[in-house]
Length: 192
Length: 326
Image 1 (tube, rainbow over the protein chains, first blue to last red):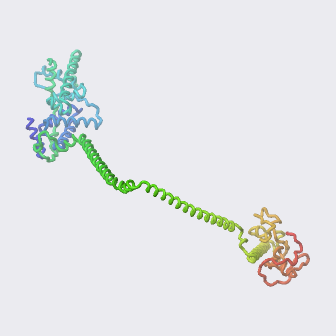
Image 2 (image 1 turned 90 degrees about the vertical axis):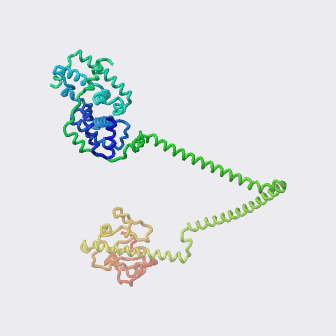
Image 3 (image 1 turned 45 degrees about the horizontal axis):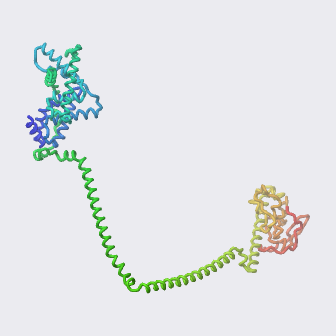
């Protein structure tokens, strides 16, 4: 997969429009999902996705293939998001519950409700993490990037990614343990 | 890794993915702007693009280039300095034998003769300096003489010009001065006569009773003083005018103009008379006093004398009947 995407990037680099379209088809959903989790709403996420791909086409001639196309694009998307926040003086956006309306898997109704409640608690706890920890979790777990790719995308060392993930998991455990002692809001109540 | 941590990771990895809105893909495809570049396979493995390479290394390259330039400059300067030092040493080495060579024979042959020659040269120099001193002293004396002459000439220049004039020239100058004063006196009498006539035009053809009544008709009180009358001063204004400021005798106060030959003003110094018709007869009172006749206390000019050029005041032949001024 990585070789294929790198080949596609190489072809697009030479001016092949079909390869560029193929790259869009492969990555625009993941990039949009990543930015949707970072940004506050669908419109901002779509706008940031367009900016990301505009910058991808600008930077494509300088893409040397030292990293995967996936981590390269996520890095561009992450910096586009940071620039957008700084330029427009946005405060840290808190995502509305993007996970609540889309259950993770198919199961029986009672299982669905139970899974949805536990997943909602985890996702909600992630949203309450510090920005660096939250972004690391999003890239590594949500976007399924490896540690190296996450480090490349965020411009930090791999050891930093590991440390942040450890911190995030510890924090999530603590939050979930504290929530279990208090009544936890259900997915249905969240939607209301 | 604990169980709950594993569960959390599982939940996180199974997170639902937000679905992009419809039409986003088409927009992205429409916005594709590709710039054909060199394939990365042409570059060595791990070699960034030229712009990226330069962007990454310029903070190191710029100081290195500056340091290299400074080192090259310093080396070049050091080499130039070394060459110059060597050239100086060579030139001093070449000049040393030339300086020693002429002195060597004297030192080597005869020290006594060299000392006597030096003494002789010193004596000659002393003689020459004495001659020069005497010449300078002579020049100084000459300059002192010239300065004395200069002071004398300046003193002569500072003396009044009369000192340069002869007796004839002094007499001619005095006559010219008298003539000029006489002409000025005639002019004053003319203006006074004209003032009286102007006053009379506004006052039933009667002359003013005194001089002060016609001040409006006179241009300045200076015309009331004869230029040859050094005993009086002209009034600066009519406000400060007194009879002591007038040199002329006013002989026809409140007189009608029906007597044109009656004497209006008379200058006791030059003998000029101004008649009631405004005319001035120069020097009549001194040159032809017989023509002035008193009738009923009034002075008349009987026969018109021939026109006389105003000149130096003649010797008084007939003093005025009354020497008082009006």
